[in-house]
Amino acid sequence: MKIKIVAIIISCFFLSCSSNKLQPVSTKEKVTLPKNDQFNAYWYSGKAELNSYELEQSRYGEIRNGEVVLVFVTEPFSLSKQVKLDYPQKAEKDKVSVMKLNHIRKFKTGIYDYSIMNSIFTPIDAQNHPNTLKLNTSIQEWCGHTFTQLNLEENSYHYKQLSYFESEGDTETTIAKGLLEDELFTRIRLNEGKLPLGEIDLIFSVLYSRSSHQKLQVAKAKISKTESDDVLKYKIEYANFNRIVTIDVQNKFPFKILSWTENNGDGLLTKAVLKKSIKEAYWSKKKVSDEAKRKELQLVW
View 1 (spheres, rainbow, N blue to C red):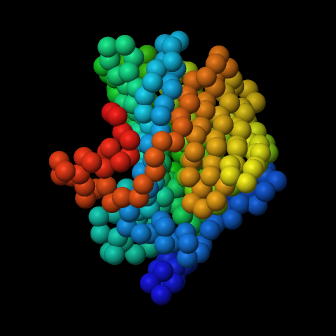
View 2: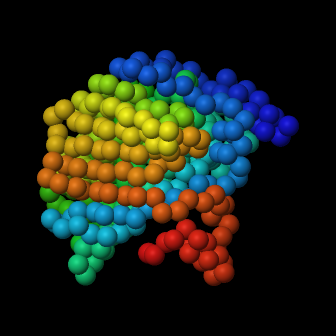
């Protein structure tokens, strides 16, 4: 009964949001939004899904071992400010429910280490809010750090980059609105494991832009899929850039990300394989005794 009530409330809330036309994409497979008791019970349970991955990351021509954590959780979000709401009950029509993904990647390069965090905020209601609202990426290493953010505007993304390095400095511009490579994981989780197939315009990942010194932009890509009883395998190939991404997805609810690879034309750049997945209200686990949860998640960093 509680689940049904939650579903009714969410449906009513979505109807109150401002409406935007859903932009058509080239696809051979219809992508629909899951709105059912199973989805609501899992994603509105008051817990986040925490996933740890064993990482192989190429940097400076060598493969480094590391670790990735993917944190998936739903949150109330402000449409106007594009931040998590402190008092969602007061926000009225400014409130939208999003799936947040915090993608944390850590690895060592010799004596020093890299720590990378990518945060994506994708609305649950794709019919009224078809584009991810916000993306930010921070990269810290011993030389310095950079911060990149995209905020959705009416017809484009507002792009801002702050960098320690002189050749980059601080940059502010706009990028045409489109599907982000960085949001493919949240789209998979929201769309019952589905991605749009065929030729598509895709904004490649911020991390690829940073590591390859490519200007962040909309690029032509092709998404293909093979399927077995257990795994959905996606392949994303860029037409004019040496970049291929593969994603293996659990072929049943809740469609967890099992592994992925990134190849930039000169060999494997990234390989991540799932170690452990748990549900936990991690924000309340702050005691020394709660460090046992890190062992449960098989974290070594």
